[in-house]
Image (cartoon, rainbow, N blue to C red; front, side, top):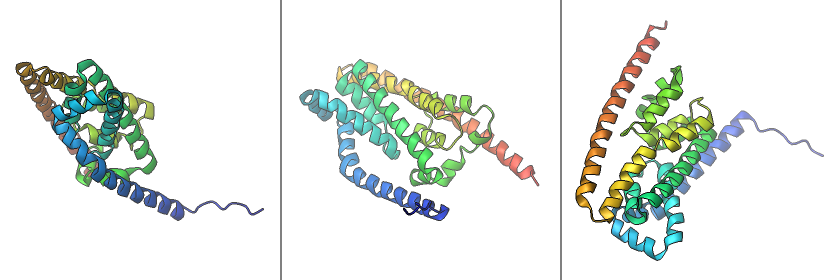
Length: 241
């Protein structure tokens, strides 16, 4: 019997790159076939609710699949799907579906990044955005900082989720943070969507206005802290001979 030859590092790299290219092509095809129609659903909640009423159990599975795709695709906005869930499924059932879907989506992203590494991030995000989070690698309190950044309203959760996969934070910890850290966003968006579906437009405006204000404050806090840490890291790097 012939002994099976081990793949050389170059062959292993070629296989990984080929797999990544194939994944990108599949993702592009899915975007054309799925993302565009599902965005139409999300932007037209009335149409989405009518479809849910006609296909209640099937619609739950389809919705979960749509949200998972949105998180993996990263460039597809997630808020319209959360609002649509509140409008179509109600606050309680919509929240449960959204939490399950976004949790699964986060797990898929983390596993993909752990498999393909830094190159996968570059498919969806610019080098500048990726570099802006490098301070997490060197921080001694990276888990706490990552958790706060993820829970804080207004922060770029898709970018954080992808970047978390290339850190040395334990996978289980990342899964817990990226799943439960989305709850504040899920709850506020779905409550607003449910209010619109119930015809309580005044309450919906209040919810969305407060959410927008809190998200804006959260984003400002996040950006200031990030810039401060990046500046400190750059200064430390420049000081090294």
